[in-house]
Image (tube, rainbow, N blue to C red; front, side, top):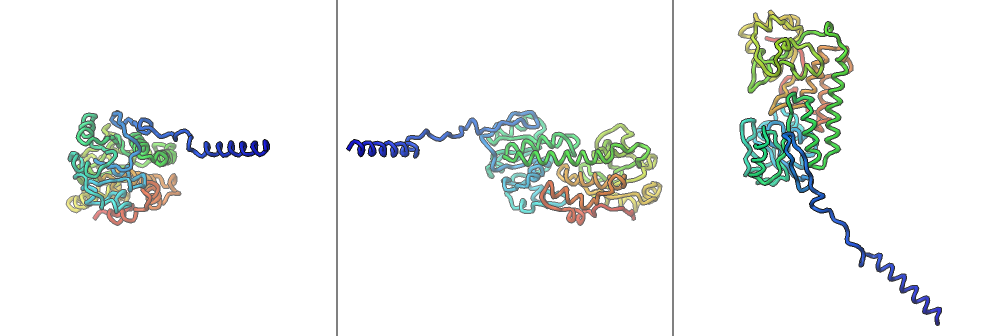
Length: 370
């Protein structure tokens, strides 16, 4: 009898242990508190911005903001699009690669001279507003106050191509949207292209470099051959000998045509965005152009325009490889510029779009002015 009682007691204890381990009396599961889920970032204006958690829906306003978001190849996070981007994809690989973005709700006019529209931004209920409009902290704070939505300033910096501010902006987007691994991948890609261009050209001596000039660059509209840049980012990327650097000026400037004749560069590049202006000027004044050695020797080339709603970094990098191929064929002998352009577009935007860019602007080619 005692033996049976002992057996029943053992069985009862065993069931009791199972009952306890089944969770009826287990400790409550730990939950993530709102404090631990918050994300705090410092944007490119030095503002500290706090979000309740990972952003599921975002809007990107101002020149180039949407492009940076498109580099993450996850357009499902975008809640709206500015009219300027909605109306035209020409010259914008980020829209050529993502035509469905045109179907998103309109969140404002866009353009460098138009202010954001808080009501439209509120209508699409984003978790965060990425902006390149804000030139100072007060402007960003004002938009955040009006909408009640966290506003994070992004920037392309001064150089736009290979500028540290671009990588900083990509890092911000990645952290806020939970796509940090893609942000790191993008930063590594930018560095890889920059270092490759540098390594190919850094040891070329000055006497081995042809002199070079770029004209037809966009500057608040299209311009002719007189429109150029000092310390031109693409020439800097491949250590080219830019005749304009002799002026000691940086950035966009208009030169006197007689100065171009005095410089008489070995090779000339024309931005395809300004090519029609150059061709019209040639028809009016062919003598000027024929006085240039680059024109007489057929050393004049086109590059794809890359300034549409600020810098299309992808196209700019592709241009740099093409320019390098023209100036230093030996150092770029393994590069097919068209294939390289599509490689860059695919890596950054997930789609090859060189064919469309070439259809719209003529592509990489030697030019004949007539």
